[in-house]
Amino acid sequence: MPGLNEINNRIASVESTRKITRAMYLMSASKSKKAKKQMEAMLPYFRHSAEVMTEILAASGQVDSPFFHIKEGTEGHEDLYIVLAADKGMAGGYNSNLLNLLKAQVADRHKNMFWVAGMMGRMQMNRHGYPIQADFKYPVMNPNLYRARDMAELVIERYKSGEFRKVYLVYTSMVTALKLEPTFVQLLPLKPEDFLPPGDVVGGDDPVDYEPGPEEVFDILVPHYLKGVIYCALVEAFTSEQNARMFAMDNATNSANDMIAQLSQRYNRARQARITQEINEIAGGVQVE
Image 1 (cartoon, rainbow, N blue to C red):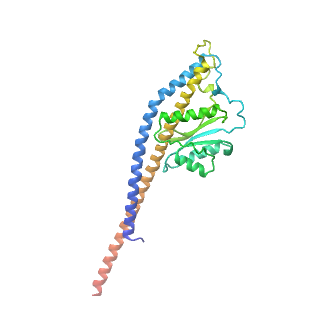
Image 2: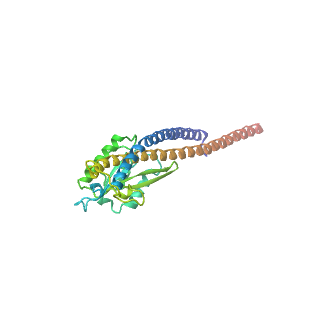
Image 3: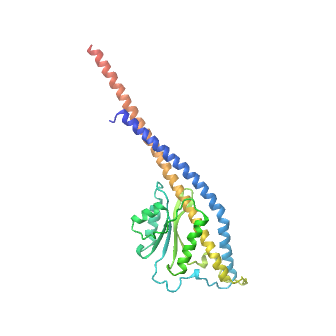
């Protein structure tokens, strides 16, 4: 049986670890709350952009936008997958769940390109042999509109040049506070049916005139829409990462509590055994005399 000092040192070590996991839980809870406020502030802007695009499609004639179809000459080019992974570890299976989704959705990873935001996600995907663009190094923590704008402009530039046939966004969506779900979204080309309510068609009975034209107005709105989509995904991914870390740290803290209880019980038993042994030795010495 381990000695009392050894058990006592083990208890002190676990207690120290428990303090760290508890502190990380509280930090993640605070960051998650802040990220949720960011999303609530952004949603009206994003929804308004989508509503205007919907109005153009529903009220105008056929809108012929390059964002609605694959450009000619792109056949054979790889698709692009933008993966919003975790910046830090100790978040349970957060990154592994994204990898499992990619394995299920992407038939041949070597025919496609992967842009990964999040340092830990990049490291894990590199280990699994995914071809990652080296100069796409964006953090997921502390998301902001400037970062989303840069990412959206880069995606649009490379897409319009014909480098990619399709662009997908892969991130973790927070369905509820207790349910995190890896999500697979097609960014480009856009689908008209994604903007129109069920039953509506492109081009209504009362066309609306847009200056300089519906296509031009629509193409101006697309970058704002994509920026909103990417920003919302960044915020949701960051919030999901914090929630995943909260759960992981809460489980770690509970495990530490259980371990401390078990070690305390072993310590008490060992201490009682030592006291009993000392009493028996004293009693034996008195009888000998």
